Each structure stands twice: as structure tokens, then as C-alpha cells.
Length: 358
Image (tube, rainbow, N blue to C red; front, side):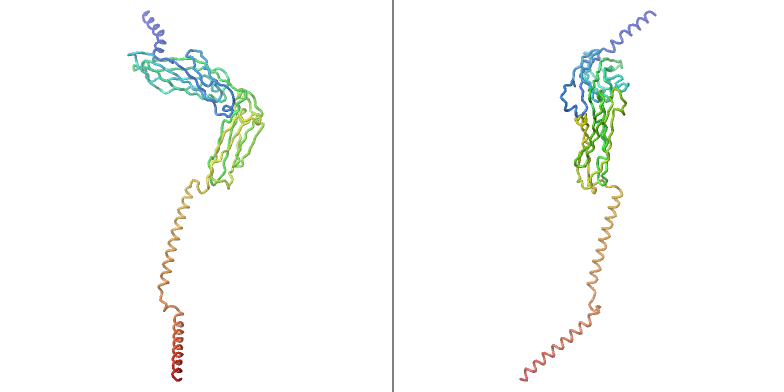
């Protein structure tokens, strides 16, 4: 009995070493891709958007993570066995950021891969950071698992810290919808845009503008109030604007941009998006089935007209072949000609006789 207990205790103590042997995370790189907000592109500010992370429990991921950004962790995973030791198969990495999504976890897995002894593989795991995330530290767990050909499991795990920061003033256009984005005969469409406060400060002088010179659009809403995203509901920190648009009938076919501009303090441009409206000539629009039927009818009409013209041609030819004897004016014309001829002969004959008498 003591022997069994000793064996069980030995296996319990040995298990973590077996699980960790042969499979290790040897490097971690972090990279942040920020939202395409206009202010992020033009502001003069140094940000740490990429960094190497020490491979040790409790390490802080040293990049500036903001709401709405995309975090990519690149892991180098190695099979540390050597020589004839086993290949590891079906290896995958999993990263879990705890309670970052309104109290829920974000979890992503890498693709599966195999490693021979002494080889390593780099894998990318990408996370979209929620826009309404609270600033603070979040526990981040990295797990790597695999097995050998005998289905013996191997794994390793790291616990890191991810800090999410917020800017004092951070307003963005978070949604733009132009429906439909292509018009022809019916030139009506609708533009919807949403602005969100992703910063830590309350904003009460926000302006949202729709503008297009070609389309005659110049709509400006100002003094919009947006609550702080740390304290408010989604409805309180967001503003939606809808505009019904009708392109002028004289507008030529082409693509016309509509600018959606978001201003802080009613005049400082913080974000800008563009929606393209495609205008087509009415005749060049997509042909519907009723129009196709109409086209077939037009073809039939053309064919009927051709047949009528052919029949008219046959009638003209028949008229030309009718005999003049059948015409009512023919007899008077012939009799008149005969009388004129006789008179002419009599006059000539009389003139000749008169000449001989002299």
C-alpha cells in the first residue's frame, strides 16, 4: 500500500516536469495596430506600438494598447527535445485576456503545427481590443499544448499583464453606412453615421458633418454631448446621424465622395471618413425582368414593321404591272391624238397644192 502511495506521489510531482519538457515559449513580441481615426494619423505623439516581452510570469506587455486597437502577440514556440526524442504534433497556442470585454474573456487560438526535435515555429495571435473597454490591467494567459506520436501530452503556460490606456479626448466615427451606395433611375439613398466617445473625458462640443459639393450636401450638427465611456452606457456615449439624400437628376454618371467629418470643440477635426456614391445613367442601370420583356416586345414591333414594309413593296410592284387599257382616260387621249394627226395632214396637203398652182 505504501508503495502504491509512493508511486502516486512520485507521478504527481513528476507530471508538471513531463508536461513542460520539450515544449517551450522562447520569445514573445507584441505589436499594436491603432484604429484609423484621423487624429491617430496626424497627431504628434510617441507611442510604443511594438516591443519584445520577457518570457517570465508576471511580466507586463510593454506596448500602448488603446480602445479599438488591434493587439498581435507573436510567439516563438520550440521543441527542446534533441536527437531521437519525439516529434511533437498538433501543437497550438492559446491566448486568453480575462474580463476585458465587458467582464467576459477574449480568447484566440493559433493554427496547429508540428515540430521536430530542436525546431521552432512562430505563430501570430491577434486580438481586437473592444472600443468600450475600461482602462486598467488585465490578466493574460498564454498556453501552448501538443502531444507526441503516443498521445503523451506536453504543455507550457505563462501569465502576463496587459495594460489598456485611454486618452483624455478620443472621439471617433465608428460606423458609416450608405444604402444603397449605387443609384440610377431612382436617385434616392440614405447615409447613416455614428460617433463614439472612447476617451476618459465628458465631451459637450462635438460636431458631426456630412459634406459633398457635387451632391449639394452641407449638413452640420454641433454642440453634441457624449458621456465618458468609463461611466456611461453605450447609448449615452454614442451619437447617430441620418440623412436622406437625392442626387440631382442632371448629375452625370460617376463616383461622388461624401465626407463625414467629426469635430472636437466644434471645429478641431478629430476623425474623417468617406462614403462613395456611384451614380449611373438611368438607361445603363441593371435591366429587370419586366424591362427585358419590354425589349422583346420592341423586337416584335420592329419585325411587324419590316413585314408591313415588305407587303407595301409587293403592292407597288403589282400597281406598276397593271395595263393602261384598263385606265379610264386612255380612250379620250387616243382619239385626241388621231384628230390632231388628221388636221396636220390636211394642212400640209393644202399647202403643197397651193404651191403647184402658182
